[in-house]
Amino acid sequence: MRSEEEASRAIDLYGDTVKRICMLHLKNYSDTEDIFQTVFLKYVLHAPVFDSSEHERAWIIRVTINACKDLLKSFFRSRTLPLDSIIEKPGEPDSDYSDVLEAVLSLPPKYKDVVYLYYYEEYSAAEISRILHKNVNTVYTLLNRGRQALKTKLEEVDEHGK
Image 1 (tube, rainbow, N blue to C red):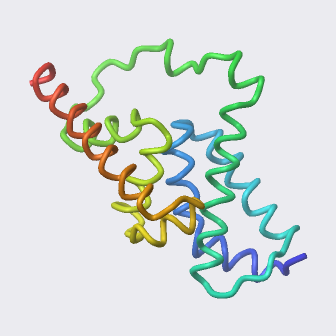
Image 2: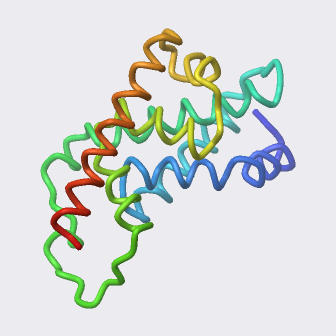
């Protein structure tokens, strides 16, 4: 079991990354908070030994992605509908940034993870392959297909939205 100081340090270092990954997958603040707690609880209770800070960060990201996937597959999640999808939000600001973010969020998870880690977290393809336990060439393929899907989605938004 890790000490309170170690847990606080990890939350300070990786908390924002965990929340961003959760929002990418879950698109829901309350679920994000739940997964945030789950990830750092696992960090404290399981106390794996890390070779470096990069290894620790990769472990945190992998645990976060797995926890998000587990939540999305859960029985409760598959049988409920979020209130946000029912309530229309009048007067929401429309911007290019929100279009890009919406397009990234709508990508299939296998592309979304790679695009996020590459562009936002600035990992190389080799680092992403280690984090996601995929072949480097697979990462390049997913990244290329993710870019193409993103480009197509953004072109559709541009044609229909403006």
